[in-house]
Length: 357
Image (cartoon, rainbow, N blue to C red; front, side, top):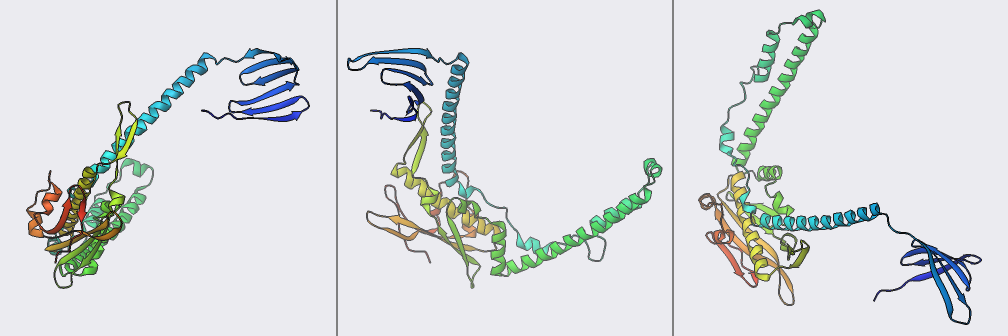
C-alpha cells in the first residue's frame, strides 16, 4: 500500500501552496469556489456549504508532446541497456578473477643466469673509445657540408653540434661501463649468498606483486647455512577468494548467490597450490638456490571459533621443479608430488597441519 503525503501552506489571503508526492500546486479561493493550478493543468471546484453538493471541472490539461514521449522512451531503453551491460561486465570481471586465481603459477619471470653475468665481457676495453664515441667521431670526421649549410653559413654550427654529440656519447659509454661493473659485483655477491643482495634483487623485480594484489602476503627468510629460502605465505583467502557466485539471468539481469561449498573449497585449494608453485618457480628463476620451503598460513573457522595456522607446507627442490610441466596441470595434484603436509576435505576444506622440516 503506497503512502500518501500532502501538506498545505498559506502564502497570502485566499492563496495556498500545496506540496504532495506529485509535485506543487496552487489553490486560489475559499470553501465555496476554488481554482487549482498544478503541473497537470488548471481545475475549478465549487460547493454549496452544508448541502454536500459540489462541482469539479478541469479547465485545461497538459499532454506531453510526441517528441518528449519519444525521447523519454529512448532514455528508458538506454538506461535499461546500460544496466544490462553493467551486469554483463560484472560477470565477466568475476569470471576473469576466478581464472586469475587458478593460473597464478603460469606466469614467471625470465631466468637470470648469474654465472653468465659474472663471466660477461665489458662493453669495450677500458681506456679505449666506447662504441658510441667511435660512432660520433666518425660522423664528425666524415661530415661534408651541404650547399644549404654553406649558403646559410651554418657549417661551424653543424661541427659544433657533432662535437657536442661526442661529449654526450662519452658520458653514455662511461655509464654503460659502470653498469657492467655493477652487474659483475652484484652477480658475485649473489653467487656468494649475500642475503642483502638477494633481498635487493627481489625488491627490484617484485616477482610476487600480483599475488599480493590479489590479497595475499609473501614473507621470505634466508638460510645462513645453506642456499635455501623459507617462505611464509599468508593467503588471506577472504580477500582473494570470492564467496559469491555471479551470473546472468535469462533476461540478462545480474544474479548473485552464495558459492556452493564444494566449488568454493576447490577454488580455495587451487589458488593456494597455484601460489605455492608460482613462488617456487620465481625463487629458482631469480636466486641461485637449490631448495625452498613454503609454509601457507590462513584463518580457519569452525562452528564456534576462528583460528590461525598452517594449512599447507611443502619442500621443493630445483631439480624437482625443473622436471615439472606447468601447462594444463592440476596444481593440487602437482603439490602432492613434492614433500608436503596438506589435509584437505572436499566438503570442509583445509585442516591445520605441521610445517615440514
